[in-house]
Length: 137
Image (cartoon, rainbow, N blue to C red; front, side):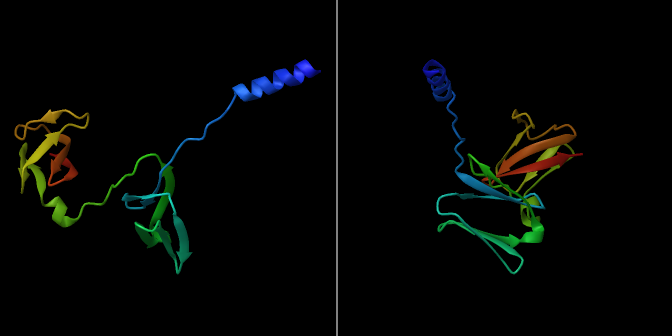
């Protein structure tokens, strides 16, 4: 019996589990925008139909009806909806990139592309510290 208990204890100690380490809570709105907050000192409250999250240095607030999901993540995300001003900064017209400032074009698999002679399709364009998904028709 002692041998069985010892064997079980040995097996249990060999099967240690480790929880994944998550440093951020990501809040995703129905429109697709995401905001990540560090989880240290994170406080979430609900008041007057609003979700309010704050960790002392960052805060987030949105109507509950606009929330799609919340999830823990190892890295922060910052996916935001493009504004009309952002959208006017870059476009692809007749296969040529039009941008208000220096820009780089990438295929969806990460290859850098020329700024002219682009075939119809979807591209990622980096301009002004932001990345845009642009469709060439």
